[in-house]
Length: 170
Image 1 (cartoon, rainbow, N blue to C red):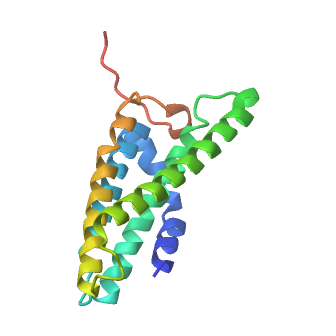
Image 2 (image 1 turned 120 degrees about the vertical axis):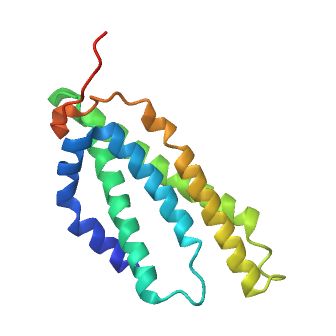
């Protein structure tokens, strides 16, 4: 079930430069983060009766947005650095990415601990309900996290994306 996510990540890699050129990093990262949160919530609709093709489609769409997020964030780290600063930017970008993954695992573990009942006393339906609740909360947290990208300026990263933001005079 991970294959559709990987296929989307690979096959849509070429679309991101076009998207960034049209919208810029700020809009892409805000919209993409919201969509990742929505997709997490959509995963909470999966149950025993969900067709495999629908789960694969959801994984494919999630893979597209995940790929966009990682690539956008990783390239933005190098947007306004010169050659001498590139090594430092690489270190910071790598560290931030590892911290984000760690916080993601910790958040998912926390949500699971909150909503999934004790596995020795719960039946399958209670476990699935707990997972669904955890996915909804994680999706909501992801959407709330867009405030981080609202701090970006409309023209941040334009040297890489070739996006020319319309900046109001004044």
